Length: 389
Ligand code: NZQ
Ligand code: ZN
Image 1 (spheres, rainbow, N blue to C red):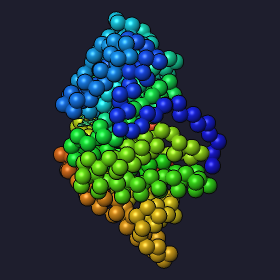
Image 2: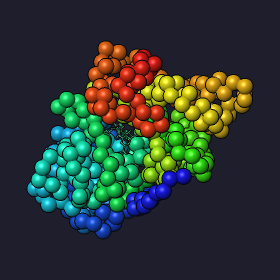
Image 3: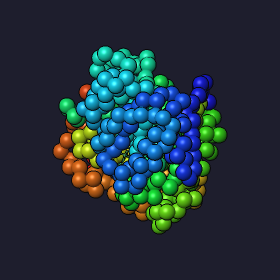
Image 4: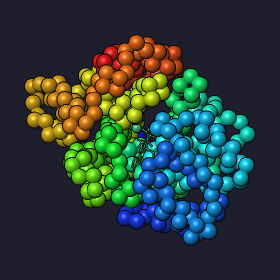
């Protein structure tokens, strides 16, 4: 196991009706805030009314900025930065999914600088300050509610890039599993695929003697496999949503990468796909991950065998470990199909004519290999995208 430091400061308020505490939670930091949300689901569900009632009760006033799109855009972030500066707002409250939260985190960094926040996403400097962010989560998926990450798409060049900073851990996140009842099935499935991907990115590591976290990762993957059919069968299954929502947060709050180095190539490759084609992140991962696995399988067959046997209950065959590993990958694909996702680029309506461009962007013109488990050059990324085709 590698040395590590771990401190996740996000306060979690979990359970039925938890959003009613949002006013109190916000008022600890500021009485004048930016209320940030997406395309309207929170108004249809009535969540907007409950959140604003709680803010009013706590004496909090707000400026609103809705309209965050999935794969959140830089232009709206810039509008949010402008509003924060103009009205001297003291916190950004994100009510929604990963896209709203990521947009809020970007605004939080941008509000503290004179320059362009996009520079951080290009790796030009690192943030030294950020406004506090709080969240009310409406979809278990990205894990942004307790992560250091924010992923933004710049419409100029359709580049999707991430920043990671401990400054943007949300101060609090409100997790009421009931808020997921209204999710469309495709978003449910995409969210589950994203959580699964966050676990697998961490699972496939070269670091040895990490069996404790291996076991936690396996348990969390098994939780997804058992709870997914329950929420898809009954969207109002509070108990199953509770398991999924908490699993989604734990999957990405950095606990499960302690002492190890995750891979993240599949995420990097998926970000190139959703940057250009605006596909749903989790649905993109369901296509990339199996292809990545087939490509890197032989790098550490034992790890794939362990995963297949422990997570997918594939029968051990010491004489044919590759068949065991491939059976695990086939089980993963079957799971994605079962929850309603495709595993080929064509299922995303993504043609194969820009594979070279995506491979090039993903490796910064073949100067920065993607991933860690196996370092992938441009040609390797291209082969993975072809395997996904
Ligand atoms: O915009 P509204 O109307 O709210 O609709 C949203 C949106 O259309 C809808 N939705 C959300 N909650 C709902 C609901 N509809 C009905 N009922 C509800 N309760 O779902 C759609 C998708 O929302 P989005 O926020 O885009 O989903 P998700 O949480 O999957 O976020 C995806 C984004 O997160 C990034 C992805 O790249 C992508 O841009 N990621 C962020 C990470 C991070 N910050 O740590 C890590 C991830 O790996 C990921 O890259
Ligand atoms: Zn993800």
